[in-house]
Length: 419
Image (cartoon, rainbow, N blue to C red; front, side):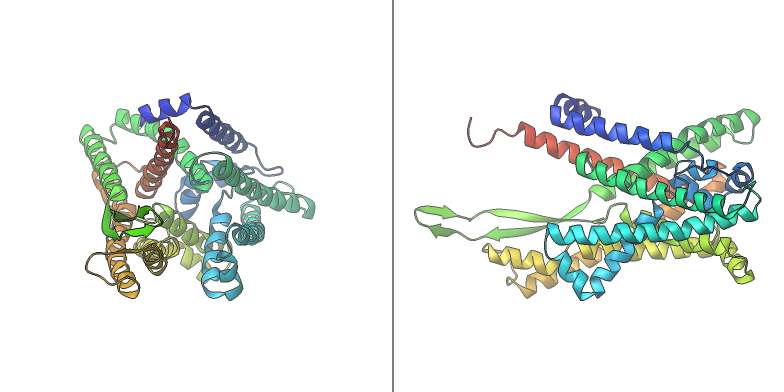
């Protein structure tokens, strides 16, 4: 990985992209320390440190929520809006037609997603403002100060959405994933020093540390193994004579990854599950408070729902990104076939059956890794800030980003047809 990164810095275009990413990350981290005007975050920080769903949200914002800065809501409204738009694209004919119109149609859907993000951010901003007002964290709760807080939080989320899009467009990798990756990484140093302090006090033993390190390394290795795993479907192309040239007559394969969706299901499940629980926690009703307490991250109901949502979003995202019927039609169009199968419907059914089976393995693996650290806590006595979720995201985003860097390097070092 270090070799690929050093080689990337030697290429001018890649160096600009990498430096642009670091510049945007710097802006993001600086904004994470700009406080919202008119708020005293001291009492709010005590609630965050107690853990729960707000602690998970604070993990995705890199501590911005605990400090109640302009990026306190993070990018979760944008993720929720993206999921809503993808679901609507599958059921609304107009949106489905736009998605098939190429780049122009996707631009219109992206614009709708931005509008939905602002609306959801505004609603969530109102909820957070009411919550901190009830806690007495707003010294002068008049209509003007409350309005400024809501607008500031909404503007912060809109700015993060723009920042993520800029990273995707002008940098390398998915901008939203990189922002979440940065937030999680920024929390790790404080967890490290807290663990050292607890070791010196004797609450954490050397055996706890050894179990933690071994389990962490094994988990990272397993994540990389599954993320890189793929099922290769052989494809044979028949020979075609066009004029004096002969085309085709070669063998290749279609790689079908075990985890086609990457870390997107974990991010989706965390954001979708956190949104209603946060709203329920802010409502002054008994049933809402009971729901919020039942869905705390350490509870059995939360873990079960979280695992089920990860499996659902893995299948959902895989179905969006890989269409067996479309792939089968393209193979047939160019004179290819899977050995032993008829081109067309038989090939599509075969690929769909394989995709369903390997996606199940990838989805179950993601769910197990996401909830496993909750059962490891009694052995290690180290709470690494929702370790399974954060470890999946960090490892997955790092792998995908390095893959894109290596693909850029391969293009730069390719000799081409003329020497």
